[in-house]
Every structure is written in structure tokens, then in C-alpha cells.
Amino acid sequence: MRRNRILLVWVALITLGVLLAASWLCSEPETLYEIRFLPALGGSRSIIPHSINDHGHVVGVAEMSPNQWNTFIWDEDGGITDLGPYAGTRHHHDYVRINNVGQIASTTMDPNGNPSVFLLDPNGVKHILRAPNRERIHVQALNNRGQVVGYYNAERSPRMAFIWDKTTGMQDLGPPNTIESLARDLNDSGQVVGFLSTMRDSQWYAFRWDPNTGMQNLGVTRSGMIHSCRINNQGGVVGVFGSADDDTTVSMWTREGGVQNAPWFRGTFARVVGLNDANHFIVCMHLSELRIRQLAVRPHRASFFCDPNGGFKDIGNCLGRKDVVAFWARGINNRGQIIGLLSLEKQPKYLGVILEPIH
Image (cartoon, rainbow, N blue to C red; front, top):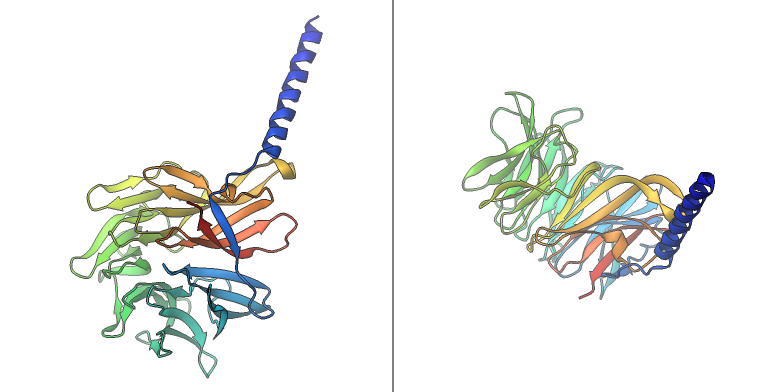
């Protein structure tokens, strides 16, 4: 009798599991975004968007052949346009950026075959950025005033954060005792965020630099070289800082409230890839989770849309498609448009996309 009861319990549990799985497979995914696929550039093998402005213009890189990348710009009216060779590193530590004025900051090859960083005005005038001793420059962000931030370094040498504009040229950031520093983002007021390490204890810190008040320490982090930080035009900051022991600690900083942790994220390698003026931000993470359709536990790339007042959503679950394997966001603008890379079942490569919010 007891054996029969146990058997009935197992049958009931298996039946419940099958019904739940069937219900999940038959349910319609939530549809909060319309997907727009970016077209190929000529015979390009893949398209990787880097930046989107508030007009919906997108810039990024296209793989034309192995180890050969070109920069592109896309807009709805003009389509996709080739902007020439891209000289960023294979893993894209350099970025292509566009602002609302239409200026583009990127890295290209000069006539001698050396990497050259430039700011391109809408009228075609190109301004070349130069480091003090012609070190390699890495572009990270561009604001609507045409200011560029990033870092420069000679081969195998410490990195140095900078801010650049047409009038004053390149200015180093960081106190005199800085060992290494990286500028990650800036707003239209010229306020810069990033990470630095000092000679005092070799610890990495997140910083916020203001052209009028100077450097402010926002908290420790495990390693600024791999972490991310974003600032908006209200001066709010979101990034991976606040804990030297946990590289998934996503924190928010405001002038009024100081540093507060975003308690929603636990995973490997959290990265803040976008923050807009509505304080909406995007966090990307590597997760391991059960994928029912593939019947396996496998690494999974997930990108989350976060509203400090309304929680968060996995963007990949909001696209109205059941064949989404992963979505890896690259940025968000003030219209709520999101750019990124989409992986679909039976599709061998990631696809460059723009996600248009459905209101």
C-alpha cells in the first residue's frame, strides 16, 4: 500500500511538471519591444552596434572579413553607410560613439597604418586626438558638446584617463598619486565617471570628476579595468562599485542619496551598458540557468532593463518571440530605444538590432 502511495505521488509530480513545462512552452512571451534588424554593410559577416543617439542614429562596426572591421552609421532615412576602416582592438576596448549633434568619435588607420582617433563633425571636418607622447588612445564616450573621454597608454604601460575637447585639447584626470585611471562616461556638463587606483593602497575606486569641484570618490571596486560606470545629465551615476569583494554589486549614486545598491543582481560579471536621463539603465550579466526548450543548463547572456522605481525586466523575455536564445544590450537613448546583439535559435551568429519600445 505504501509503495502504491509513493508511486502515485511520483506520477502526480511528473504530471505536474509536464503540465507546467507545456504551459510555459505554449505561453506567449511578453511583447514590450519591436525588433528592427540592422542591415549588413556590403558583404559584412556581422554588425555590432556601439552607440545610439536620441534621433535613433546608430554607429558601430561591421566585420568585413576575418580581422577586418569597418565603422558604419545607420539611420532610417539614409540606411547604412561605410565610414572606413576601424582600428579598434578585436575585443572592442575602443568604441564608436555618436552624439545628438551628429558628431562621431572613433578609431581609424592613418595613411601610415597607425591607429588614429578622431572626432568627425557633421560637415565632414575631422579633428585628430593626440596623447602627450603619441600613446594609443581608447575612446569610451562622447557628449553633446563634442567632448571625448577615455584613456591612453603606451604598450604594457599603465592607463591614464583623459577628457578632450577642440578648445583645450587633452586633459589628464586623476590626482597626482594615481597609478592607473580609466574614464568610462561623461555628461553634457562635462562631469566624468570612471575608475582609478592610487599609490596609497593600490585599491581601485570609482570616481566622479566635475570640472568645477574636481574628483570625488564613489566607493571601492574589485578591478576598474573590467568594470563599467555611467552618468546622465542629472548627474546620477550607475556602475559596478561599492564592494571590493563582490563584482556583481551594481550601485546607484545621487547627490541627494549618496551610494545605494541595486539589490536585484546576482551573477557573474555584471556590466552597466547604458543610463538615460529618465534614470533607466541597462545591466548585462552572464548567468547559468535551465533552458527548458534546449533541455540543458547552459551559460546564458541576459540584459536587464532597470527602473529604480519599477524594478527590472529581462529584455530577452520581452521581445514577443519564443526563439530568443539571448540578448546582449549595448546602449539605451532618451527615447528608450535599445541597441544590442540578438541570438536566435537556428541562427549561427548574433544579429545587430534596435529595440523600439511599444507604448
